[in-house]
Image (cartoon, rainbow, N blue to C red; front, side):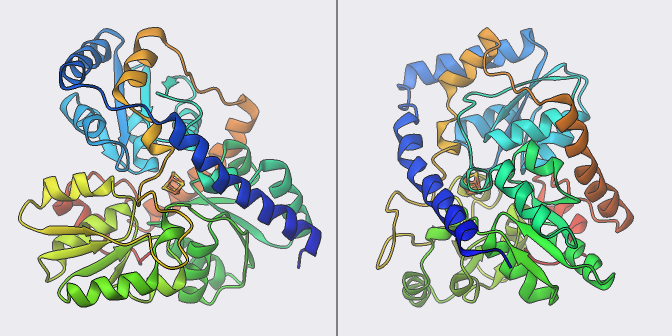
Length: 376
Ligand code: SF4
C-alpha cells in the first residue's frame, strides 16, 4: 500500500480541488436579461450554421444550452455520448458545453475536428484531484494492477490507463477483469470505486478522489426527506456509501432517467446535479422531482447540488467561442493516441456485450439499451 506521505499529498490535492469551487463560483456568468437572452440564442443558432458547428451539451449545464443543443441538431447527453455523437457528425467543429475533460475526450475521439468550449477553465474536482504526474507514480508503485479510470480524468491520466469506464459500464468491466483474476487500481472517484468493489468483490485499490457535488448529499437529511415523501424514490450515482444505502435505484445519468420512467412512483428525490432536473421534467411532466438535500449537519457546501464548473457555461461565453474561435481544446497528439486505446477498449467491450453506452436521452430507446447493464 502507498505510504503516508503520498496519502497526505493526495488528500491535500483533494482539498485544493474543493477550495477551487469558490473560484469557479466567482466565474459563473450572470444570467442575461430577457432581451439579451433572446438575442444570444438567436445569435448562437446563426453562428452554429455559419461555422458548420454542432453543439454537444451535458445534462448538467443550464437549460438554455440544453435546449439550444436539441433545437439545432446537437445532443444532450453524458460525456461519452457527447464525444461519440460528435464523431458521427460531418461538421468540422464541435462545441462542447460541459467541463474540460469532456472537451478533451471529444478531441481524443475526433482528432481531426476543431473542438471549442465556452470556458476552458471549467474543470472537475475528480480531474483536479488526480494530477497526471502523481497518478503515474502511483501506477508505477502498483505495476501488477490493471489501471481502470473513470471518464472524469484528463487526457494524460487516460493515457496511463488500461481501461476508461463510464458509470454505465464500470460494473461490467470490473466484473470481467475480476473473473480473469486481475487486481485493479481504480481512479479517481473513491465513492464509485467503493460501490463497484462492494458489488463485485474485486481486489481494488482506490485513488482518493471525490465529486464535490455528489459528496455533499447527506444521509440524515435524506432520511428526513424520505419520511416526508414516503413514495418518492431516491436516485443517485457517485455519492457516499451511507447515501447509496438509502437509494431505491443507483445509476448513471441515463440510468437515472430510465429508472424515473420505469419505477412505480410519481415523485422522486433526485440525488445528482440539479441540472438533470431540466431533462427529467421535460421528459416526464406529470411526475414530481425533488432535489436531495446537501445542507445540514456536517455539510461543507451549502451552495446546492449544482456543479460550479458546469455552471461556468453560459450563453455569452458560448457565443463568444463560436464567434471568435476562442477556447479551442488542444491535446498533445501522442497523449491523444495513448488515451484513445483505453477508451476504444471500453467501446469494443460494450459492443461485444451488446451494451450500448451511448444514451440518446430517449427513454424508450435507452431503457432497451441498458437492460443488461448493472447499476453504477
Ligand atoms: S458534477 Fe462532479 S463529477 Fe461532474 S463535473 Fe462537476 S465535479 Fe466533476
